[in-house]
Image (cartoon, rainbow, N blue to C red; front, side):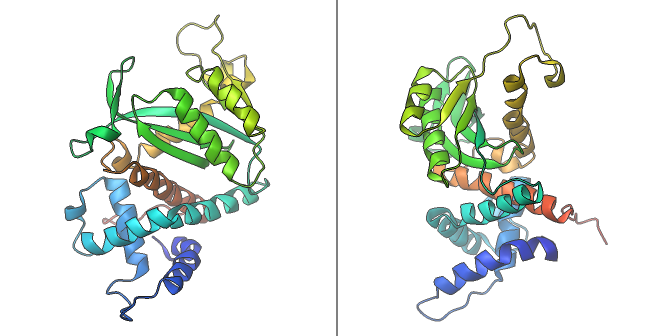
Length: 274
């Protein structure tokens, strides 16, 4: 991370570190900035824990903080604070009123426990199902990771629950045809209007979003674009994580990387740079 990108994250990490002092008084061998660099490096390259470059903290130190921040929600806190800044810069309120929901089926690595995976008969994908709720800027509001065999309805209801758990601003959600009436019925308990966006039956083959007649159908593509951006982070292409919560944390870290670069206007430096 550049100095400007680290400055966006440092206050949260510093506050967390101050609230979790070591019992022995040990301050740690590695700087927190290097820990974050190691997490983001692995997220982008998809390397194994044992193959982190020698100039980054080792697996034991990096995974310790990754697991701590995953379990207490610090990873989402960092992400949400950056998301709020992007929305405010775009002239919007911190939290959205409209979200778009969709799921993505991904293969699971061989180390992933079988009891957390499944198979989608229609897509022939054995693995996990990743669900996102995003706003109109494509920023992630909520994420869930389930077995791929889980029905869309359950994923949709869990996403709605998590979106509603944010400050009560979400009033409408757009979902695809895979979500059924159970999701629409679930919204009655959350005061969220759910609209199932169906494809225009007159369309044949691929139709560019700009040429679609239905505005909700065009709007719903914002979540598809977000999935495309996340696939640039190789750790998310197959699901390597043993725990679904770790997979969710990976999404938040990937988006933290994307948003930090958007806020600073900087790209990630490569080893070829002088």
